[in-house]
Length: 569
Image (cartoon, rainbow, N blue to C red):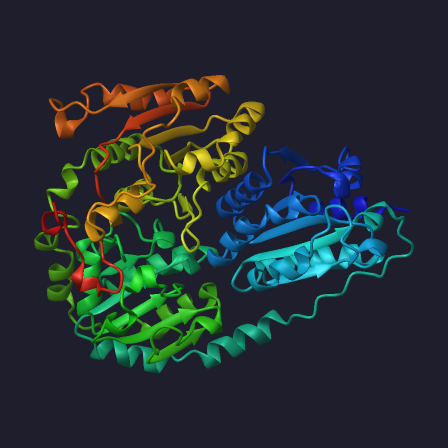
């Protein structure tokens, strides 16, 4: 009969997962003892936070639940930031933690923590296993919950004695009780097609806002078909990037605090806003009371708790976008739509250039444009958190729906390096570029060892401005340049540090005499980085006081965004 640890691995494989990330410890030794022959590849990261972020990267690239494993106590608590990150960004994640022996729970035993209780507010579901026979069903439910509806993290805490115990007779798995035909008919009957069509035909300035929900639902194709039919201006949240075809004439780019001028202005002027799978957080809306002030809102959303949360919707359409988007297209039909060409030309036209010309003179933006132009279509950009993240998002142009990956809702510095590991393992034949700042890279820099061990050809673009750049920008603009505790001028020699991990690289320095302040040989440096079959670092020495614009100040409306030429000197 199998032991509990064998049942865990068997359950993981039954879910189609062949790669997990973790860090061993006393309470999970039985699990690691049963690893050989399980058919599961385990990636040893150098910190549990690295494991959970790598699992997130794997999940974001594949759309399936990533798996992170940690021991009890500090191992489990080191997963918490990643769990919260996955919850905010709707990433399917199964975290498996070891726990002290069942009879010691509640005694403050060595490395005992109530990780079940700690994670209840930030998981979709948490479970403390009480017996070995529970393991198959608990694991099955964990994956089901993580991947269904609005995806998110779950936690399964297993006492070490349950991992060691031999299972007796196991209950049979539950039989599926779904009736797909009846469900599809019910959804079709409930869809408010007449109301939606009426709203569209009354609108003078309609606009679409696309969020991560479109990708999570696997509904990019029907979304593009719908937008091609409507031909109305459309913007994306940072997690929606890649959902709209980059060459589409109605593509306004990213919306929100550092969104494009065109997208934010159109959001302020629209009279009908179609929201597809976006939860309308404050980084998207600015002041929610002044967000799309003249608009009636139609909100397509799988998570009913997000409906009417920020702004009341005129029409709420709950459900999976894979179902509702085709129904939307069907409801609109082939009858002629209103002529929105004048509005579309105003919203998308050259007079509302996506950025002021002066902003495009920022060397980082020019460098990113040239980097993106060299990348194959199936490449992945994994951005950390800070100024470089917003620059990378502003310039991102790709038809790969899952190609831009970052920590959005939680804004977790240190995310990108381990997440890029997960992405590269999930997509071994794709180019994976990790874009990080000198602050964030040092939060999980130990994962360079994981890159070396796994021989992963990840490309690292490190933007080094010797500051915690985004905080410094706020200090400059709103706190009279009081750069309190944001100075990183004592950074290590990142090239030497990378070489210590067996990773080569080179330094790209600003050249006042070069185009946009960049050296003339930057193209060669970019190509050397991308063409190297091994991991490689390109260290970009960014100007210390380079800023990200447009920028919507805290509490302001999107229409009150600052452009570079308007900011304080």
